[in-house]
Length: 334
Image (spheres, helix red, strand yellow):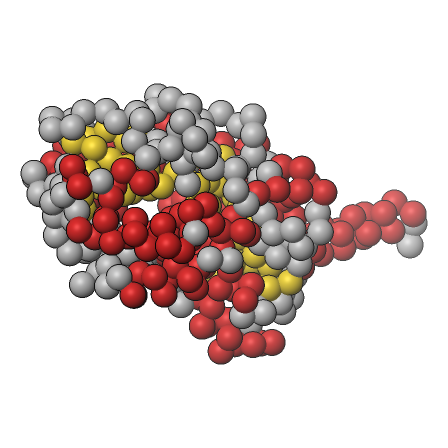
């Protein structure tokens, strides 16, 4: 066999090996957010990405599957869910200069066990008609008696609110956070219920004047014909801009403990914090790229700049259990 045939055969074998590479991903994120990004990754790398969607229960699934799990990566939202996977010993650390350079230290685990991919602000929505823009509002103000009967929120024990309470504990301590929770509860217009969008709808309908909600919901409602009028009835306010900054949560990724394709999985992780993927994240879900220097979507940019709380999410996550306990003790949802 001539050398040209040997080279051709070698190239064919390399191509077949690359084509056979794959990554299995369990995702709590919606298909329309992830599929355009992984499609580009596959086109550029030749690595196939198999996606399995499940909004809840991914940690339990990984526990059941154990060493037999096909999952290489898990994509999920909220620091609580990321830490649930870490605390259950379901992940393995990843060391990658690309990930460490792209992601600020406050948004990744120092041991490489989880990495943020996007950020979102836990904002305060206010009625345009009855309150107007509240550029100087603080989370602490939600306990002020002047807002009695004027606040709506989803369950205090939803992970988004648990993370906020955990951040309050990290900054204020238990006594002040308990007092704050009791004050917020006393100011509720109704029992906690629904999701973040439902609270904005309640403001539009006059049930309340203020609500807690993640920033990206604002953009998604504005682009939904059925919900646009809800979003147009409120302002999105970034809290605590004159002091510590607004509480920021994340969506993120972990590599599973028993990943069968760790090299390909790491390549996908690194791709997700590249400029192209970060831009798509920003445009598709109105989130903030975790990597600095990536342009925001025009709609998100129109909301203006904000100051983020620079306290590490690792520090905030240490207070999750205490936050849940306090929410139970003040009977926040009852």
